[in-house]
Amino acid sequence: MFRKIYVGRNFSDAINALRNASTNPSNRIQEFREKLNTYSNDILTDSFKRHHTYLRISITERCNLRCTYCMPVEGVKLTAKGGILTTEEIIRLAALFTKEGICKIRLTGGEPTVRKDVVDIIAELKKLENLEQVAITTNGLTLTRQLPALQRAGLDALNISLDTLKVDRFEQFTRRKGWAKVMASIDLAVQLGYNPVKVNCVVMRGFNDDELVDFVDMTKDRPLDIRFIEYMPFYGNEWKENKMVSFNEMKKIIRQTYPEFQALPNKLNDTSKAYQVPGFVGQVGFITSMTHNFCSSCNRLRITADGNLKVCLFEGDSEVSLRDALRNGTSEEDLKEIIRKAVWGKKKQHAGMFNLSQMENRPMILIGG
Picture 1 (cartoon, one colour):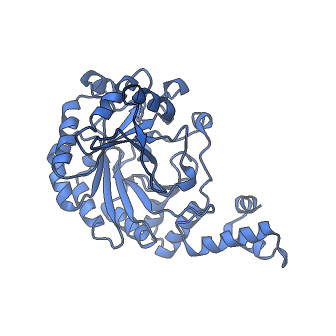
Picture 2: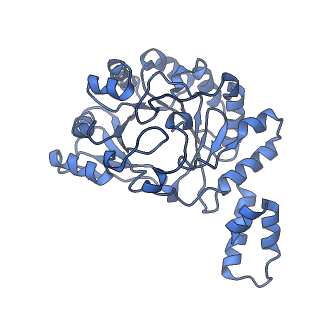
Picture 3: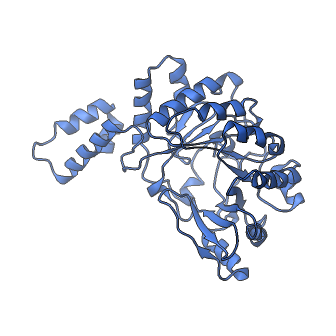
C-alpha cells in the first residue's frame, strides 16, 4: 500500500493519505506509520530500517587502465570536466553526510589517483568531525610515488585491485602494461604499515580461476586481505553466468590445497565473508554479490563522479542529481530532503543474478564501484 501511494502521488500526499486512515488502524497501517516516523527523523535510514554509515564517492570517471569487466571494449563517453563534482562540492556533500551519520568514506573512480587534487581531497575530508575513516580503492598503477603523500594527508586504508599474478594476463585483463608497478604498490603499502592491505580480485572462469590458491599463498606471511569478487554484470562487460565462479566453487577449489581453510567471524555490515588458512598472517574474503547477496544489511551509498546519488549499485534508474541541486543553490535542508527521499526508496534487495544481467545500468567505471 505505502509503495503504491508513494509512486502514484508525491510524498506529502502519501503522508496525508496514511494519516487520514482509520483511527483504529490495522497492524499493517500501524507499521506504515512507524515507517513514516523513521522517515521523518533520519535521512539515512531506509524503509527497511537499514541505517547507512558508509559513503563511496567517485572523484573521477577517468582511468589509466581498461579492465574488461569494467570498461566496454568500445570505451565510454566521459562526462565533460564541468560536469564532474568540484573539490568544494565533494567536501560540502561529505560534510552533510557525515553530520547525518556517515562515519566512513571511500574514494573511488574511475581511478581516483589520476585526479590531481586527490591528496587535497583526503586532507579536507580528514578535517570533518565524526568521520572515522577515509579509504581509497585504486588500481595501484601510480601508487608507489603517491602513497607517502596520501598517507601524510591522512589516508587510513586502501584497496588495491589486482586480478592476476601473471604479467601476460594482466595485460589481457587491463589492456595496458603495469603489473610490476601494482605489485610494488602492494609491497609499499605493507611497508608503510597499512594492515590489512586489501587486494581486490575479480574471478572469471577460464581467465584467472586457476590462480585462486596462488592468491591465498600471498597471505601466508603478509598482512593482506585478498578479496575474491564474484563477476558482476555491468553494461558492456559481456557478463555470462558461465563466466562467473561462485563463492562455493571458489571455496571448493581452495580446499583442495588447504582443506583446513576456515571461516572467520564477520561484522554486521561486512560485504566480504572472511576466511583464513590457520597459521597464515593474512586472510581471504569473498564478495558474493551474485550468489549470496548481503542486501539485508547493506549500509552503503554512492555518489558518482558527476554528482548523482546512487542508493544501490544495481539500481540503474534510481539516481538523483545532488550536483544539480548544489549548483541551483539548494539549501542544506532541501538537500537533506532529496537524500531522504532517495534513501527511503531503496529496494529491499537487488533483482537477482539473472535479472541483473538484463537490466540497464551504467558501465562500472561510471558508477564508482
